[in-house]
Length: 447
Image (cartoon, rainbow, N blue to C red; front, side, top):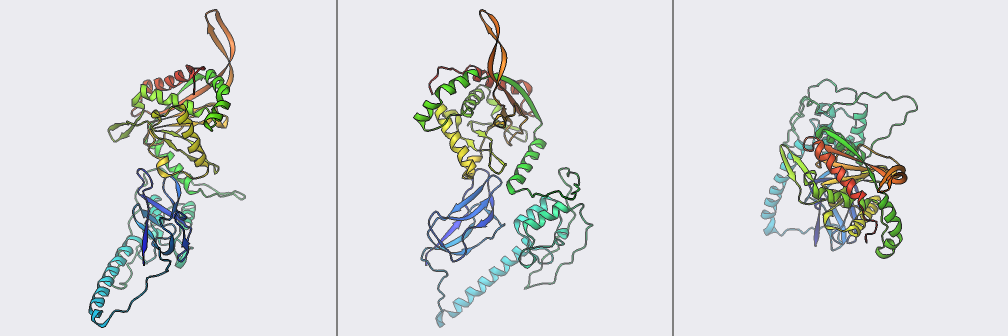
C-alpha cells in the first residue's frame, strides 16, 4: 500500500513551529489533492495546509493544540484508498525473526514513553500539551501549581481555555507544595518537576476587579500575539517620534486626473498608499542607515528594501504584509502589490513569508480620520512612518508677485524610530526628505 507522509512545510522566515488549531479531516476521510487538510497557526499568521496527495487519511500524528516543528510528519495518507495496512501472518520459519523485531519495537516504545512522560507529563502522570506548557512557562506557573488546575478535556486534560481562564482569575501564586513522585509504572518513573517559579521578567498589570454586569471577552490568539509584540517592542526600543507637515496638493490633483485612466488600463484602483511608499523608498536610498536592524551591539545594514504596510482586518486585528524589493518596482508595480496584499489580508489568504522580512513599515492612520499618531516599531526594524488624514487647509503661498492665502491639501507624517541607533538628526532628516518627495511630485508625470 502506498502511503504519503504529510509534513509541516516551511512557514516563512524565522518560523520554526506551528500550533495545530483544527483538523479539517477525520481519519478515514477521503482527501483530494490540494484540499485543505488542517489549520495551523504561527506567531505570524493562520494558515490552511492543503493535502499534498489524494487518498484516504489513515493517521494523524498530532492533535489539536499540539505544537509541531517544521518538517515533522503530521499525517499519513494512503493513496490506495485503504484505511490500514493488511496484516500478514508470519511463517513458522520467520517466527524467531518476527519475535526479535517485536522485542526491539517494544524496547523503542518503552523508551519513547519514558521520554514523553518526562517531557509532557506532570508528577501525577497527567498529560500537558506543548501549548499548555508554553503558556504555563510564560505566566510563571510552576508544575506544582499546574497540577491543581482542573481540566475540562478528555481524562481531565488541561486545555488552552482552562489555563487561560486560570491565569485570568489568578491573583497570586500559591505557596510551593511538595510533590511526591508516583510509583513506577511499566518501569518508567516520572521525576518530580517542582521548582520555584522564575522571577517575572516584565511587570504584571494591576489586579482587575470585575463588577456586576461587566463582560469578559477573551483575547483571540492574534490579539494576544499583537499585545506581546507591542510590549516587547517598547521594552526593546526607546521610541522617539518626529513630525512633519507635507503639502500633497500636487498628488491629490494628479490622482484625481489619472485614476479613471489608470483603472481602465491597469485594472487596478490607485490609492495614495503606493505614492507614499514610492517616496519612502527614495528617502531610504538617500538615508540607508534607516533601513537597518540591531543585533546586540551589531548593526545590520539591510541590502533589500522591503516595505511593510499595516492593514486592519475585519476582526479589528492588525497585520503587516510586506512588499519585497519595493525599490525594484515602479508606481504601477507597487500599486498592484499593495492592492493584492491588502485584498488577501482581508480574506485571510496571506502566506507566512508575505508578512515577514520587512525592513521599514508604513501605517495609514489617516484612513480612520486621524491627523497623526505615535506608531510602535515592528521589531526587528528601527523605524515606522504613520501618515495622517489629508485635509484641506488655508496656507500661505509664496509667489514672485508676493504672498497670498490659498487652499491646500496637507497631511502630517509621524516618524517613530529607535533611539538606540537612530538619533534625532537622522530620524528628522529622513521624514523631512519623504515630505520633500511628496511635495515635489510632478503633476504632469505619466504612470
